[in-house]
Image 1: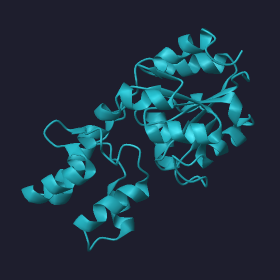
Image 2 (image 1 turned 30 degrees about the vertical axis):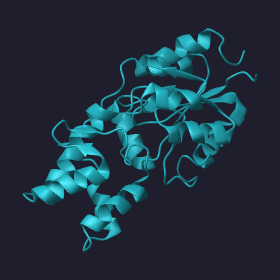
Image 3 (image 1 turned 45 degrees about the horizontal axis):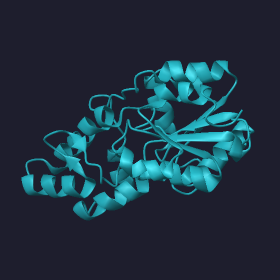
Length: 235
């Protein structure tokens, strides 16, 4: 197997603790947009897959790995007089309701990979500018050579385009890349791009859902350096 030269990471649920970051924000968006209309709040929460009381996304939520356009499509029927552009604006997190929480150990993990000379990229279904903002807020922005978003010109996962685009920008072959993610979208994109898919459990999907689609399921990205150093792939 070809030596690993680069590692690609999903953002939400991989570098960022998904529930602690997005759960409170999602509940706040519903409360703001629906106001006192309890039935509308509950219907919207069901459509988006959010537990309003716990302020957590449910495993089946289409928002978890979805693109911004897909989330807008889910919201549109509840707000028929609002344009897609207006609804998209609602999805831009504000500092009052959104604070990205990095997965423990992620800074040390990525710094170690950089020290080894590995190329690092983020491949997300979020907007590129939003991804860059979140990385900056978490103190991770200086660690990544490339950031690919849904709007970066390569499409969205599970299509392989974003992963292939990241590899091209890094100047490495797809088969020399590991793609790390917390959802089936991430793992399918990796497989279709010819990369090594690695799953982590810092998102919402359980291990048994991910296991058949990844070469390994790790608790978090903090476990990745040890797994790679054991010679499980490449050489």
